[in-house]
Image (cartoon, rainbow over all chains, first blue to last red; front, side, top):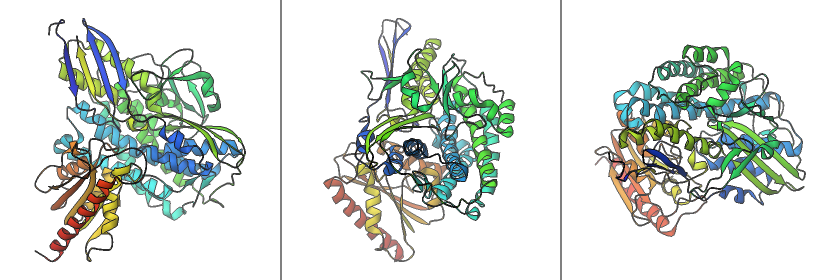
Amino acid sequence: MSPARRRTINTDYLARVEGEGGMTVKIQEGRVADVKLRIYEPPRFFEAFLRGRAFTEAPDITARICGICPVAYQMSSVRAMERICGVEVGGQLRALRRLLYCGEWIESHALHVFMLHAPDFLGYESAVHMARDHPELVAKALELKKTGNEVMTVVGGREVHPVNVRVGGWYRAPRKRELAPLVEKLERAREIALEAVAVTAGLDFPDFDHDYELVCLSEPDEYPIDRGRIVSNRGLDIDVSEYDEHFVEEHVAWSNALHSRVRERGSYLCGPLARFALGYDRLSPLAREAADGAGLSPDERNPFRSIVVRSVELVYAADEALRLIAEYEEPEAPAVDCEPRAGVGHGCTEAPRGILWHRYEIDDEGTIVDARIIPPTSQNQRTIEEDLRGVVERSLDVPDEELTLLCEQAIRNYDPCISCATHFLTLEVERC
Amino acid sequence: MRVIGVGNAWRRDDAAGLEAARRLRGTLGQGAEVLEREGEPAGLIDTWEDADALWLIDAVSSGSPPGTTCRIDVSAEELPAELFRASTHHLGLAEAVELARALGRLPQRVVFYGIEGASFDVGQGLSPEVEAAVAEVAEAVRAEVEQCTSGS
């Protein structure tokens, strides 16, 4: 191709990303001149919608933001409200939250690993095309997803937007005998997840890595899911209430979503790769063994290998759910009383694709005065753009069509939930 | 026989399929079940796997004027994913149908009714054109199900 000729590749929309958005890559004189992720969703609708509502309504309203990670929204919002009320939900009430969250991780990761990301590696346009040649793989993915759904239904009351979560705990705690039928299914899910680790570890990965600042939650004795301090591999170690002192959100002209960065340093990565790197020693022995067998170490920095890390987290989520069910005792009361008082509270939990941070201000009657939500996809946005730049720079000689697919694959490394932050995704590669 | 209305109750016209199912509930004879679903593929496939005949109703976004309806005999042709471009559940109904077909988990007879939406923004309430189309589609599905029940 002549460098003087200008070429534009335009795929209709970037499929297989939850929600829709757009990406432009401009190549000029054999160099990457520009990379932009565009986001169109009317931003921050829900933050405005929350103002004036009762603090108890936050979990149900925020659960509607995303069809893939409603539990994450509920968990971050209840944590924030409980902190305002001065209540710590512990014991079995908290164990049930972790169990519900495991259901969401299983559902979300199963969808992404098998249906959205695997087709990229195996050379299929979509999961539908892949299903024609590999029906057994897709059938297993559906089985995993179904088990995730069932955990959500038994604990959360519904499979898509759980209705059982409330500030202070639950409307109703499940009986032990209701959880029992999940055991066999979760054991089977764990087997499928172990197979997924072996299968994904054998894929061909583009040669790419980057020295990211990795950000996730951290708790002393457990893999991060539902609570913890915010930590990074560059020494960050803060309470979730200190987020604003260390991170900043910036508006960029081409996107409706705000870009986040670490104030002193810049872009960062949150999600499975960060959790795995910083929480490896707190995985269950089985999940750690699976990771070791797949050749993963906490030093892994190839974002394309996130598909293997997600598979390891599938093993962990099934394993952890089984542990929580085995240790479950029916609580005396399904919830702790939460009396509202005027104040500001923060909640942060690990959505399948990374940390989801909420901040609320309520008045002394419990009415929400202000709400701010920072989803993981907007935190990863700068890093996605930087990865894309790096990937394109290494592949300038690759034909346009192949380059477009590689860019899409690089975006999907982040499992971006663009519906939380955007609406329409087109991918354009412009060569000038 | 099974009728499934698919949609998101919190995305305006995306709720058209749910509303059509609500209108049909209790109006069909025995042996015809009416369900409302949010479009999660694994759940959907489970929901229809053991049915002989299936009607699916969902909002579409194909660029036609709002309220336009379409009928696709899914037993005979593919359900195009492009219809659902503005869908909030990206691995959506078209993918669920085609995955089920590839896995041999699609009922023998499947008919899809689509209702072109005007707004898929966050919020509740259907646009007037969509409201009218919902009534029309519900009536068409009722007639088809009745015809099927009477054995013709």
